[in-house]
Length: 348
Image 1 (spheres, rainbow, N blue to C red):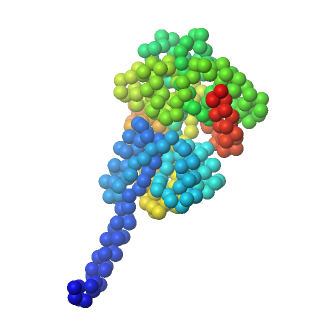
Image 2 (spheres, rainbow, N blue to C red):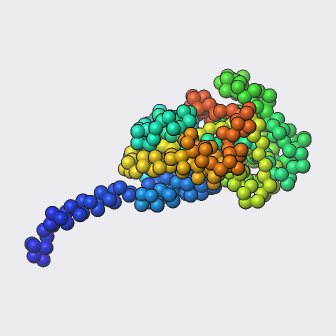
């Protein structure tokens, strides 16, 4: 090979540089969510439009919120997840531990456009969701109306589904025991309150079928494995769309935000920001709410949601009446201890 063939012209070099820039502008983004109908809605509202708009491919993944996976990647400096859907206490705790980037809202959108409670140091809310009491309308002739009914195995014999964890399980136990929503976290912050919650759970333990992934409660109801269960409102709404006669009781539901977080050390931080900014646009959040009825965090998104869907959102006035806001600072402070105690109790 002659030496002439080894030379690269200035024009070719410039083209190569531009190609590299173009490649980096459309880098793949790995987005991890909680799967199921939630993820399907994200595909339609966020992933596919993002690829169409930017050319960047979304690599989908799912998990059940295990922060140990993220911690291991960050500590090993081998981060393969770019954007992660995270629940509020895990996000706050992970932020304190240095697992998530402190977000620059200047790269996402004006703070004034978002529900204030949906913005945190390391995350931005994707949607508002609720955990509700759900039951099979074909299995129960009399409809339950409260968490006290959930605990009433004489009036409503049969198995109950509950998420396997302390969070919300303890709150529902106190609500079932007659504690007012406004007093739940104050009481749960005391030794006596924790004892009261576990004592109430003891009453139901033999009738509990534990679940871990959001897709499970509607499956358990439809299969007749449980007669009622705690469940995410959007998962039950999806099952209703599929023709299943599942019902929701909004009384004393607990609502919270799921947020986007960026694990520290991702090599695609710029692309992660680009995706989050895109997914946070009101028109995209409105499409998401149309696919699964979780409330937009972008204030401008709610007016774009179909009026037929608005009553199904956790943020609908009638659904917020008597609702309990998940207390993130409480779970950051007490979460580890309560989860350890819960796991020991559940294993007995």
